[in-house]
Structure formats: structure tokens, C-alpha cells
Image (cartoon, rainbow, N blue to C red; front, side, top):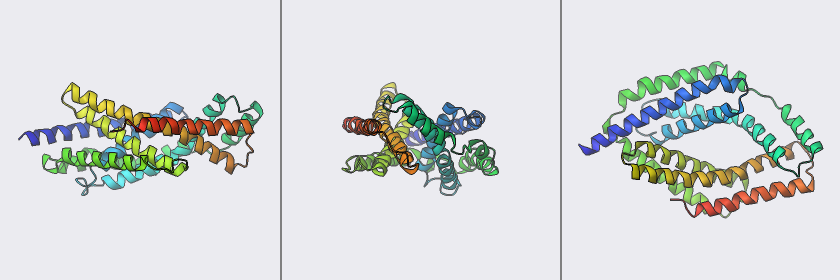
Length: 273
């Protein structure tokens, strides 16, 4: 009986959170379409959180369109990522004193020339269909099959163990100097963080909730450190593809910033789990 009550509580919490995230996505749509930088960031975060929760219960939801819907949301975040990169790079160049005004103007000119397709994406038929499919999934498909018998608490617990195991394996890599490796570790940290924050929502007791929030903060610190590294890596790659010769001082400043992110991550890694 206790197990059934626990499962039902998890079901309700999971449904509330996924529905909240979907409403947030719809709410942020208009502000994102007109160029609001913060709305774009919040939209992408909400989509990623929704995907993590759908993915965590992928097996119990196998008879629904959950896997396909999550995959399509992933494609949309990838479409929006270059736009977020532009905003981050612009702020980064403004913050680095080593970026001379002349060089900054050259880079910003290239960035301003990049095609901003957020308005067309969010007005597309594909976007509208994805919202309809997500609404149907959350409001109709999942409630029809989601019962205590699916044991969502156990499935989510297994998803958590898999997430922290993968994070630990990736975090031990000696190849963090490679941008793709560091990026994979960052994604793994982010997934563990989102799951920990969900468990904090489910927690019945304040002590348990605080423990989960503390765990989430540790993964967030590791994610943020690698975020600094990732932002630098993507900017360096963009400058390379644009064939813009970096002033020596700016290159040194970017490399230093990247390395600082790795140092911060190695410190944060000790506190994981």
C-alpha cells in the first residue's frame, strides 16, 4: 500500500511538472520570437527539462509518442542553439578587455550578419504540430496508461543511478581538453541536476528536499564551470570558421578563460554525488 501511495505521488508530481514546463514553453514563445534574449534562454531550458523528464520514463511510456516528441523537441533546441551562442559571444567579447574595439566591431559585424530564424521557426507549421502533439501526449496519452503499476518511482530511481554513473564515468576523462568531451560531460551534469531538482519537488520531508537541492547545486556548479569552457570553445570555433585572425592577447585571454573553467570543474567534480 505504501508503495502504491509513493508511486501515485510521483505520478502526480511528474505530471504537474511536465505540464508546467509545457505551459512555460508556450508562454515564452512570443517573447522569444521578437528577440528577447532572456526568453530564448528560458525557452531552451524549459525544453531541456521537459526532455529529461520524458526520457527518464521512456520505458513505461513506450506505448505513447513520448520518445518521438522528446526527439523532436531536441531538434528544435538544436535549431535555436546558434542564436543563443551569438548572444553569449557578444557578451563575452564585451567583457574581455583583450578584445580591441576594432576587432570587436569586425566580429559583431559577422554575428549581425548571421541569419536569425527564431521568428520563422516559432511560426512554422512544424512548431504548431509539435505543440499539439505534446498537449495530446501530456493531457490524453499519458494519463490513460500512467498508473501506480508502472512504478514510476523505481524507474526514475534507475534513471537517476544511470545519470550519475554516466556523469562519473565521463568526468574522469583525461581528455577534457577536447571540446566535444567537455561538452558531453556538461550535458551529463545538466541531466543529473534536472533529475535531482525533480526529486526535490517530490520529497515529502524538508530534510530530504534540502539534500536533493544540495545535490542539484553540486551538479549545477560542475555544469556552470564547463559552460564557461563550452562558450569559449564555440567562440574560438566560430572565429576559426570566419578566418578572423585573433590578436595574441585575446587568444591568450580566451585560452585562460577556458582553462579556468576546467580548473573550476575539477574542483566541483570532487563534490559530485
